[in-house]
Image (cartoon, rainbow over all chains, first blue to last red; front, side, top):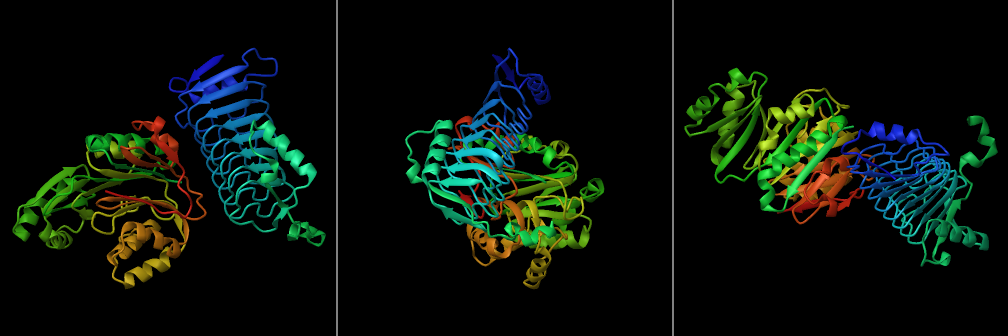
Length: 228
Length: 298
């Protein structure tokens, strides 16, 4: 295992080292110590490696991640796993605003709470939050899944497209065009799969409600197509 | 952008280290605000004496005989401690207004940055590390401190446009964001007798809180009321003689992290600003909720 101490090594050197890794790498396990809230730790990794970051990180940790399994043993600042493509990012503490924003694939697990705008404009990522999420989460969410074991703040799923939202606690308010939908058998199955993938047990899918688009905003009306 | 740091001590044993801790926090935030910096330090409150923090573009000439000028005019002993472009003038509390009047009439190029029994404010244009070192922040002691690194968006890069803003005795405010209704509000506050030194939006927020506290509200109540009356983006950190408050607007785009232990409450625009605080590994660390007033008082 490679251990990189960010108190001694420049962040740029760490990230360049990580970028050199590819599918057949022998250095499959990495540990980063003393991140001290640094920004852009392990951004742009594209290799099937595991990275354990011991401590809290700043902005954009694990952004654009592909294939790698990144665990932050602490909390993460704004934009964690932004535009993630695949792989898994796990935060054992809390995440700041716009966690998983624009994410296209992979799994983001936040074991604490996520602040506002979690999953904004998500495009295929699966996000599982054990705690609660802040306001304007899943704004314009296009596809993928957002699972929240706690509560959701104001304006959940405003202007949402085809992403599916599952919330176990209360929703302070729903955004424009976002409605509660029936939990049918396929949704229980899908949610059970997401919870299992995130390593969460002890909760029943029947405790969740499903939310999604009512598809009534002007963007869903074909007569408005010329406007774009 | 802009960077904010704040440290409110609960443990007296840390008071000699307030400046050193704040210095580390502030200088981590250079990237968020490289054009100017400033800080307010609340030292031990003086009995019967008031401090006036002064600033001058020509300190060598303006501060040379200022103590004699003031003491001669008001007929009382005063003390003047010069630090680079700033100086702290200490006068008997009941002579504060008289001393300010003499300053205004006889030393017109000297600016008053703050008055109070505990507060001192230092702020200048320049890279935050050099601003902090020219005023020897690391050597200062006290009960609480608030610092700011500025990347100007709404008004000119000048000493007076730097933060903190002080619009009332022992009060100060720093701001990350921009207010959209500051012109109207400034007009209304002027009508009610408040005075302004700049065209800066953050000064209006400071004056608004002073105006509310003049009506008898405490800092927490004034901050709560500001949610109705201020429009725009803001993360505020506010100090009073014995209080420390934090408020983010309901949209909360501007970043904020807080940490609390038995020894202190700390604020940083980023977690990086907090990493060298004692016991941070086991501190309660959280992101302040949007539109929620946080307020500590000793």
